[in-house]
Structures are given as C-alpha cells and as structure tokens.
Length: 242
Figure 1 (cartoon, helix red, strand yellow):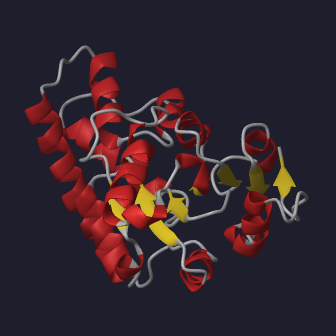
Figure 2 (cartoon, helix red, strand yellow):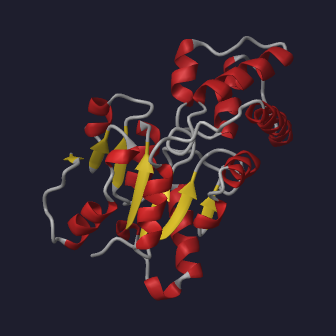
C-alpha cells in the first residue's frame, strides 16, 4: 500500500479563525432575537458544519428552521466573514501549511480539502492566500447533507479523486487526512482514512488517543516519513503513533 492523496481539513488546520466564527454566529443569533451561544454549545461546534450547528442552535432555542432559512443565515454569515477578513492585513494561516502543500505536490501526491464550511468562505481564504491552485478537489458543507463525524465528505473526496484520476485506483486507506478535532478525526476514521491530528484546537494528549499520528504543529509533519510507514519501509515514525 502507498500514500496517494492528502486531504486537509480547513478551519483549525489551514486557517486559525475560530474566534471570528464564534463571534459571527453570536451576532446572527442576537439579530434573530435569540440567546448567544452557551459555552457547551461553542465546544460542540468545533469540527461540525455550519448548517448542522445552526440547525442545532435554533432547535435548542425552540425554533424549527427550514432549509431555506438556514441557507439565508449561512449567506449572511459568509458575507460577514468576508468583511471580517478584509479588516486583517494578513490572514491567520497556520505556519507550516505552505510547506506541507509543497511536500505533497513535490511527491506527486493528490491534494484535497474536506470541510463543513461553505464554499464561499473557503474560496475566499484559499484564493487570497494563493493556495487554491494546489487543490485537485474541494469538498464543502454545500456538497454533502451530513456533517462530520459522519464520513460522507471524505468518502465523496475519494470518489471525486477516483473519477478525476482513474489510473490511481484510489482507496480510502491510501489517503491521509489532516484534522484538528475529534469530530473531524472520527469522520476520517469512519471513511477508513488514516489521520494526522494537529494540536491547533485540542491538546496533544486528547488527539493522541484517536489518531494514527499526532503532531503539535504542522511544521512537525513529515510527509516522507508518512509515505514510508504507508509502504512498510519505516514502521516507526518520528511523530507520535497511536
């Protein structure tokens, strides 16, 4: 078996924007005459799609939301998200992202993105950061009806890569996911995709329990070492294996 594709999560892996998202969600709830998020709700939001999370927030406040209503809320949030990013001189892209992308591309591996965020938010960031051309496929919250920890996004990514590159004969076990939350890790695992957990959002020891590898920072991730483990050439890794 060999490594053929690397699949990035977005929020918490590529961009450090949790604070912005939580702020915008609270603003929208208040505009809708609803209570802002509770601390426990904020915790459960991590790694999930915006649509799924908004639906739960509204249900917790006794409001049944139609798909059209949810779509309008997501559009408002995306617009506000863009306005917040425009205020920043530099996007909060995590250190190591560009290096990992370079490592992946230089080894002729396919690169994808699998996120519960909606497409306008993702495209805004990766276009501004000049990263868009590196991704062969991008799966967003607009492409699937479920949210992580369900595996649908990852399974769709494998399917689309297989369609685009049939010569690869790509299997989920030949992909590597890079995730930062237990919810995202569970989604990849359910799709039978090995996972690197990066401790951007949760402590190292929490991710270590459920990942194939765990790193403190993306800069610690060595794609060459991962390739060797996939191929059986290097059973031990410099990263922590679980």
